[in-house]
Length: 326
Image (cartoon, rainbow, N blue to C red):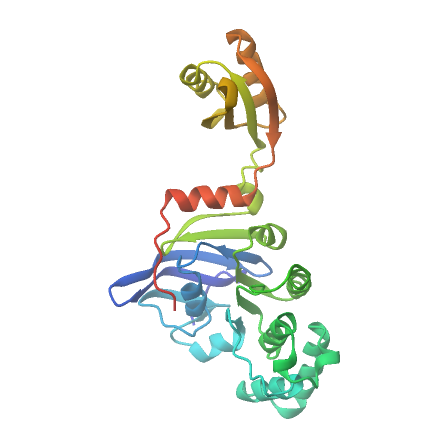
């Protein structure tokens, strides 16, 4: 066992995974600290599922190291699995088993004693709001309740770390809110790494997010920082009339403006979108310039910049070629 910072629950170093000649994960490194909820975002084929399976001990890296709660994923594979509750994208439930029966079966596979298992099943049924479904056949449950059974299985052996692959996939909006509330309640006593395609969910749930594309991590920070809000920035939209090339060139020269985009509207009007300094300074600079240059202005407003905007821009810049999933 290697001595690590005791505040770190998950440490990945230079992780690679190849499928034949195709690199699915290409040398990623990151830390997840104890008590954090971290979201792993990315388009289909970005390498998210492969990464989570390596961290959970269900897939060997081609190269690199994984540590879970200080335990080396190679030298202590069984210890790693004891420390991790892993929910795959499609939880492998047995439809002809009843909920309590299934959890008892899973607990025995995990080596839990009979008395401790009975007590723990009672506890996770309460935690996942499954007491009224304990005797139900799993195949009769809705998708939302089946997902709860998968989460209950993750929690059975009281792991300090939960790794959840698309925990709300296929759920309706009400079920998504319910599962999200469950995950938030788990965060009080667990470190959580989850993947999701629902960017608004990542903004609501996660302390930090990492964006993957083509097997690499291309950005990592808090959702608000990635959206440009921590720096006090704002996205500005203006509709102006005048010579397009001259307007764009002039706006690009403003000291606190960047990423200027221009599109043409009807009747020779232009729509400009750009990033500016917060507290209205970017808008004031633009307004002063428009008055000096005698441009017509019919709209000038600030928009909230969401994580979705950043995700789309980053994944477009780095390409979106898919890699095989595993």
